[in-house]
Length: 224
Image (cartoon, rainbow, N blue to C red; front, side, top):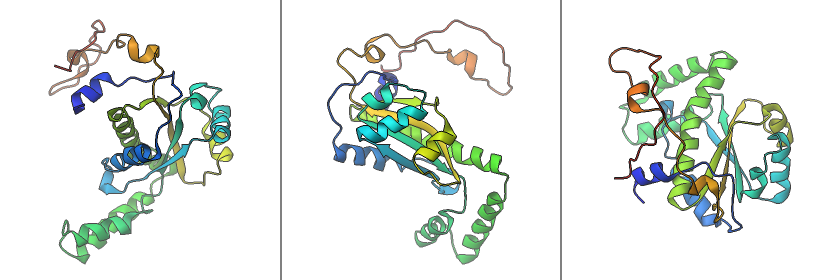
């Protein structure tokens, strides 16, 4: 399917069938996900993919008992590294090798910029990591649906309990959980008409911000 069709038909699915996702398909989905954009291309994301019944059950415990954590083929914990310097040298070496930057002096200046980012407060670094990592999570869901794999993003979980349960080190922010699986044949999430969306004229503001415009929800058809 083309990208517009992928966006138009993707749903957050809670009902999954028994068909397994092949490891090769998962690898392809994650490979596409890594192409996501991030500030300075620092790529702060990490993905903990849980497929065994035992590990998914442990995740369900910290996700307020949500059943689709365990009925999905794979539950992905999306993590953001809050240290901007974690991959900076490797990233800027790549830039230099590919002549995105002209010389070592520019590389050093870029590293200085990122080192300054690393001095931000903990809350600022968590926001920074979440911004880029959330972009990757959305790419993950679109890449999955292109292969017929449904998904559901989840923000309902206990971050501290999750980190304890899976020995997540300090410095990694649990951004969301994404469940992945082939949708059940009768999955309401797929079959029902799409939930209403706020119309473009309400959410897009040209030249000046003018909030408070109220219109009725509608279901856009962007597939044509």
